[in-house]
Image: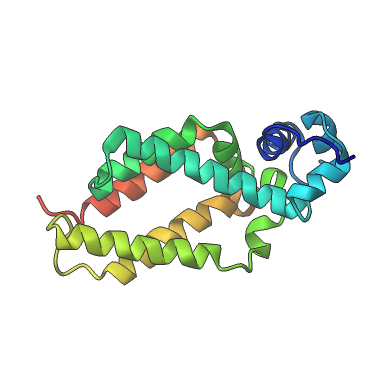
Length: 193
């Protein structure tokens, strides 16, 4: 007789993994600990995920989805660039996993950013270009702004912030907030009045 399905198995795994990542970092946790935290067998974790890296990837996707939903609910579908950045900052700082990813990339993310080969960052960058072109088409972004160049600057900043703590030294949530706010202010200089 087959074993009964565990309700919300994937979410339970991700919840347990998020708790462990925040407590100990990605590299220090194991699939067995995740299974234990989720109250399931280790094999059940592998029914949902190929391995630990896939779990972290799913955690980050879920975190990004939470941020996007929070920003959308706060500022709507079509916010101005500066408004979106300010709302993103608030959402990021209210999300423990995403804040930790920016403040302690090595512990929380391990080698995830450097090892990303699936093109996710490229796909996200292309979405930023589309968004900037939409802003420009609505007359909210100055006509002389090159959306592709601005997207490179914004995407590079975001990706750079993910490794800033490791490369330039630890910084606080307040410093992260000021850095993102500064990027938002710089981006606002490209908006129309």
